[in-house]
Length: 344
Image 1 (cartoon, helix red, strand yellow):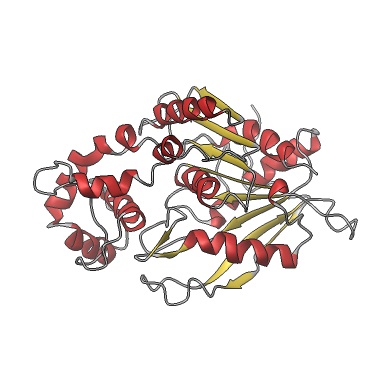
Image 2 (cartoon, rainbow, N blue to C red):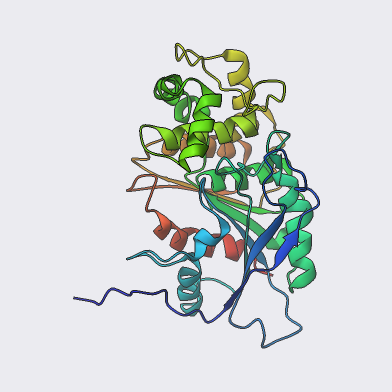
């Protein structure tokens, strides 16, 4: 029986964590830190040739995960950097610079969007993180040689960068991305209404959540994730704390259609269906999801892939045997495709 490793394998490349003092995130509404680490992985050959420049892949973490989550050791599972180096040694990927920004908020995530209730996190990625990395490291500072990818909320963030800021990246990877809200989010209304109702409403829930220092079960995780999404999709600065509009009535679980329309306006599927120019300049869009994804995101990926196919957008869409979690092995499939597409 093979020996189970107890520490991560040593990397041949190196990881640096320079600090970016963000002007955009200064005085953000949640009082979250504005000085943020930017995790930068440099490939093994980086120091050997001072004249060589590299394509860049930005990695966006899932909800409640951070940039440092990409380095976290788990039994039976490689970190993404170990995985990348194994693929590199096999000749399956080119050398590249990998970057993971910190876009965490008090609510566990920003959805990588600009919101007056959380902060301008999408602008932060494009207007501060990219120039910061380009200035410090030998990247190829052109969209043709940049990709962005993530899982779950990170995949949503990657798709939204393609939709909102196509000048920044040309290749997008979305593993089980938040998509098709009508089938992935709306079915959660009943359970969420019960959780918020038992807590005494969203404001009381948030106060209790923070007093407890995190989720305690009973739907707490899903509820705080919904607060994070509401703050990103439907900020309501004139409403009580946490200044975020829920798309359902807490007392009945019935939808609030006007607020729900604000939420669905952020849905990547809705955006692609409404805008004939959406992702038109993408070199590649990678979509996948597990066939038993608990949030129905395989259904969303199918719908989005069909919409991209109808527009002639270059894409790869796959379903695999699995659920929403424990799917990091799928990077073995996406990394070669994403990085080959931005190879100089």
